[in-house]
Length: 224
Image 1 (cartoon, rainbow, N blue to C red):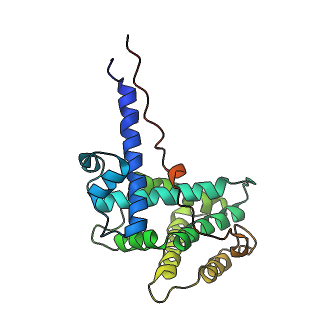
Image 2: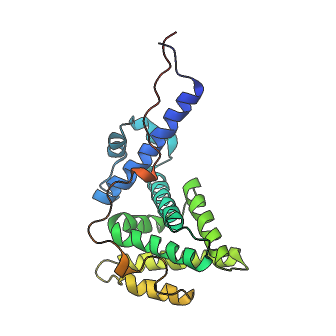
């Protein structure tokens, strides 16, 4: 059997990394951060334990990257859903609803993520976070910002604060109340985005594969 090409090996490595990100999100959402080990993540991803250390310097960095990926792709999906729109106010409304929706639907995961940001290592500006930041910067620019470098950090802080308020154990604020405050600040109409009364009921979507490009492993080249 002929050896795999360099491009095939690179694709295998990329998909292994994607599976690790997806496994981290799933397990932390199910068990919490402390109860999730790197070995468990590797097992769920079907990868060797050593691959985790190869791609990520530690569990905290892996989990932050994984959650930022989920946030980025969730936001991207909300902005691109039909009917597509270039209206800046509608896009900001969709962005707010997407982030608040993660707090509502995945409370364990998002609570652990917020707690991790407050640790000594702090907020990690990994490539996944930078992609999320770029989407939010574009959103606030389309909303009409004339100073994105000032308005983007404020939007990020307000969204993080709202997520935190929604997840405080024993004293959570209702997501619709937080939504109303954010919509008021940015002068958005209540029926923009995805209002609570129009959101589908039932449990949250447990299939996260669409956010992680795992795919199937490429077939080896045929024997010559």
